[in-house]
Image 1 (cartoon, each protein chain N blue to C red):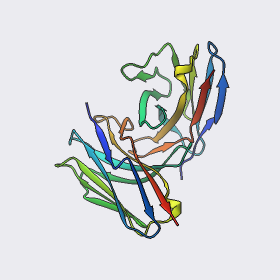
Image 2 (image 1 turned 45 degrees about the horizontal axis):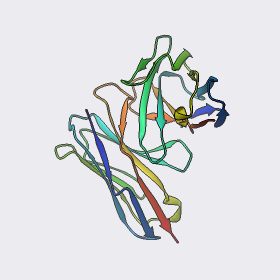
Image 3 (image 1 turned 135 degrees about the vertical axis):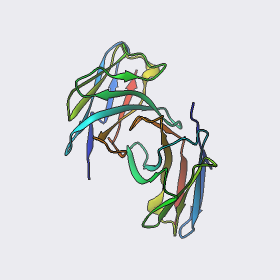
Length: 113
Length: 115
């Protein structure tokens, strides 16, 4: 069974710092990997989706990389802002079925001004 | 972008009663919807996959008779928690996919509290 681990569980940084969130998965036979953002008591917002054939994806200040062979992905956030405070989740598909996802427990990020 | 709504956003019910949660895709047709449950400080756990016009597929350990799922149209799936107990208190989130797409669009979630 696929297991998804996220490190660190929580992170608190001052505004302006560049930071890296880590995600690892045990079964490297994945079709893609997604990063999501979850605000307290809210649903999920998709940030980036990396296909298995890709090494990285960028959206604004966010950059996600994927190393399938080592079972790792990182989410890089540049010039962090207080509005980035949220829980960041990574998820991989369960087998080949579209949409069935295994999630990590998330990294709770706090950016203070 | 694709929008998914859930109703209600919060519900409090007494133990032994049933609660229905709706998940709607507002601006697209979702052939498949998914129901997740999230306990405090825990990750999202997939409960079931709901396909329009057919029976839902439940994950191992999820009681299909307790969590009734109906996907009667391409824009609506419902989750009914029957005979709810305090341990069913959780955050329930649905998601929907566009046909043939890997991307999922999540609803805002429903906070269920069973007293």
